[in-house]
Amino acid sequence: MTLVPLRIKKGQDENIRNGFPWIYAGEIIDSSELALIPSGALVSIENFKGEHIGIGYYNSLSQIACRVLALGRADINTAFFAERINTAKAKRDKIISIPYCRLVHSEADNLPGLLIDRFGGVIVIQVGTAGMERLLPVIIEAVEGIINPETIILRNDNASRKLEGLKQEVKIIKGKISGFSKVLENDFAYLADLLNGQKTGWFYDQRDNRKMIADMAHGKTVVDIYSHSGGFGLLAAKAGAKNVTLVDSSQLALDMALQAAKNNNVNIDCVKGDAFAVMDNLAKSGRKFDIVLADPPAFVKSRKDIASGLKGYEKVARLSASLVENGGILFVASCSHHAGRSAFNKAVMDGVKKAGANCKIIKQTGAAPDHPRHELLAQNEYLKGLLLGII
Image (cartoon, rainbow, N blue to C red; front, side):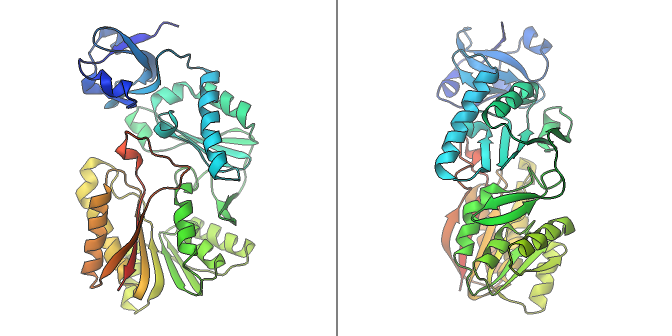
């Protein structure tokens, strides 16, 4: 198949040859051929002289106008995706012994715009770009050949699809699913709503951070703010925490946590409400905890939100720090890739100071290893955690 050439301006090709996976709109030489192809179509990436560099897919609607699939020549077909997905699976198999993990993590697995999460016999696919949308049939065929899952769910309701001119939808394309699904992580059987829950239904990226907290939780009082379905709090309860309180605005998420607690013979308390209001009320009542966890949703969804989002993290830190016993532990996380680690750390530390507390940094954390970072994309380091000792 002959592909439309996408030529990049002089001096812009070195990054691509070195593995950078994106080509921005301003780096591309305009052409009538590019203007006529549909969003997401495959293109032959060339330098300004017309020399071939690689293959990608193009979308004029996006500032990241082209995403690189392969350097050199390649047939972008089922075999191509099978090879990439098998490589990603082999990496996960070395670090995670059970089939519950992120199987494909976009650019870090050389499949930009594609996320695949595995929940035993259920596969959840999330596509964020027009290029991967057009390639979805061969992606599914590759997944079928490698894993042959009982159920495949498309969770294509992520907000980034709007920027690519794509509709948002959730659908089951193979098998069936009813009620909550089991998620095995850190020897605990959680429950997740894979059709209606946030993102792909579960946050595997916090796996190691949950274990870190659980390892400190025995005999301690714990509050899990923005608990969703109890990832941190339930594992802390299993580890022998004296008391665990979950706080979330979603009754559905709390119901999942309560059912999982019952299934695993652990006890938790739940408080439904806005996190800021609940933290404020707990502080006014004089309630204190040995371990306070705050893992809010992304406050910085775009560059224009950076200032307001950082104020949000500062407020989270201020309110949550006020709930920590002297000598206790505070863990605050951010999943906003637009908020850099230094800016996030400063916002958290400023919040702790405004709560009238002093602290020391015990550890800075990131995502679990099934969420690798592309070595040239700082944006891949989206998850940031700060473990503090309050003194």
